Length: 367
Image (cartoon, rainbow, N blue to C red; front, side):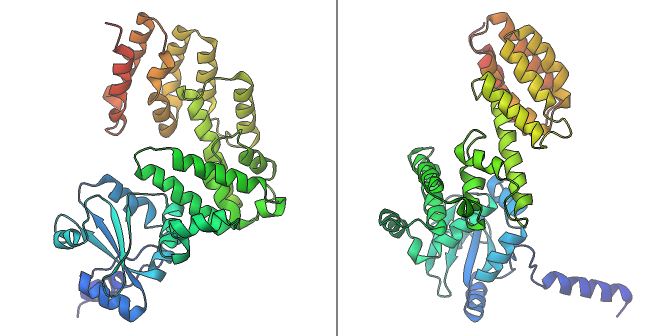
């Protein structure tokens, strides 16, 4: 055997080993996966996808490679990917798969234990999978446990997540999400300070702190140094993201300008160290200029600040750009539309998806 052949052999052997830092999707047939699950005392997890499915690709890029996700999935499942329109067409038909991605778990005999549809952030995805595997956390049992007065972190996090997901599955019905939000805020209000700082309750901050003025966020900001050192980095990252969201809400006009609330947001963003590189200074200048009401000056500033902004912040701003000119006269709205049109040649494909709708909004009633 030549040196090159030895190298290729070793490489192939390494690639065949499980990858424990990420979800290990094995190259097995359905029947082989069932046999492996029985011999290893696990379940079979099937990821039904298609070549054209964007959310499927996002899950493979952003969720399944994470160590936390891989550790959980590899411990509980024999994982396989199933192309629902090619080699897995018959299997998809057998299990009635019609939306993508669909995640389906079966036991060693092929009995369905749960079906889950759609993409989700990593933490929510694992939390939901864990709930679906627990017979004591069915919707009926969680409702009964909650109504009986149980208020454990596991129950609150699982039940609130279930209610939120129900809202999403019902096409934007906010009732479940509203109930979840009220449930978590009520739960948080009855916790002691020590309980609020417990790692068991991190889900409250990361998922249910809705804005910077929120009561949960106020405690978070005041006690940010009191959290355990092991979780501080992720807590700081989540808090920074919350401030970024609120800045984008003001920038895009989604939040009605309130001088006192805005000044608090700006002051805290700087004081907490979230604007060290001055990346939000263009946003602050734009927000403040718009609040003054001189739209000619605002449009001039738009041209100046546009190249200085981070991509995601800039996209959030432009996604609501038409809203910023509601009630303005024809000439101003046409100038705003002209500004957007001037940006089109240099934009990426994903950015072009929302700009035309803003141009139509600006030009809709001006001709």
